[in-house]
Amino acid sequence: MALQIETIRATADRVAASHGLEVVDVEFTGGGKHRALRVFVEKDAAGRAKLAEEANREDSEIPRGVPVESLSGVTHEDCAAFASDFGTVIDIEDLVPGAEYTLEVSSPGLERKLRGALDYERFKGSLVKIQTFTPVGNNRHFTGRLTAFDGTNLAVDLGAVKQKAKAKKSLASQVVEIASSNIEKANLVAEI
Image (cartoon, rainbow, N blue to C red):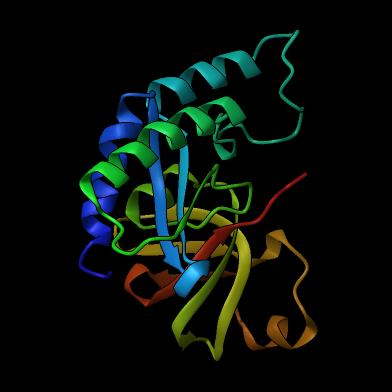
């Protein structure tokens, strides 16, 4: 299945584009009758720009205090339409071998995974939770505000959130610099 996931991703990208969506992530989990193909989608750049415009209006239904960039803008109807078309293509092209699997389509959520340079640039200024492969300043787990990304390193302001006493003492500075190649996992932290 590992070799097929890129083909599935390319197909998902093609179908999503026809719906004004972008694929954020594709996961294949489980085994036997409990296999699941999960696709996370959000509005494309034009759709997100329209969402930001909507948020600035006085009569907007978008909740105040939620960063618009954190919202995917995807509705239940968007997910259903994409799932219907994508499921048909997957079955016709037999991209998921075997009989049974479940197709799940959703937004990436408020605590979405960050997947590289484009996300690090896009979500500068947001609260993030990062886990590294190797320790930075005797720590592998960081929560703070992503203040800068220069293409290779992220600057995370740990003073943006309350830290545990041990973690606070072990870091001489409130801003830690982390190489993007050292990041094992990175997620947004919801600010509501």
